[in-house]
Amino acid sequence: MWIEYCCPQCHATCRQDSIESTDILSCQKCKLIVRIAPQSIGNDRLTRCLVCPSAELFVRKNFPQKLGVWIVTAGLAGSCVAWAWHELIATFAILFATALVDVVLYMVVPNCLACYRCQARYGGVESHGTFTGFNLETHERHRQFLARSESLAGSKKL
Image (tube, rainbow, N blue to C red; front, side, top):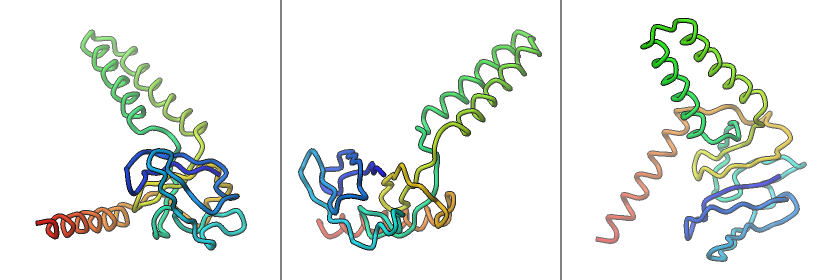
């Protein structure tokens, strides 16, 4: 199992492999050590986030979203050009090819777990049975909590 997370202190992206066999996470840049709570990984299953105290994780594809947006945008642009040239068959061929690429990527790319609160990602997790897909309400609750926390921290500096 591996983890990719943002260091709470220096905000560098950190990646650590074999997290089930260690009890600490360490940042390679600032050397911050985050202790893993013993109950976080039970029976080789993740029960909560290792970086923050959140137990709310969701299942997502381990694929860069920006690349997915570029693939769809390129398909849309290509079909618009074909449509402008009055190539009806080419227009729909490009759209169907883009959809086919999307389906193939969906089938091939493995799942990973992500934390709503700190956006840490966990790969190589065997079972996602206890966690579900993305929930906008849960995400919004964590986003608003973070915004309020930053607002309070900013007002204390004044």
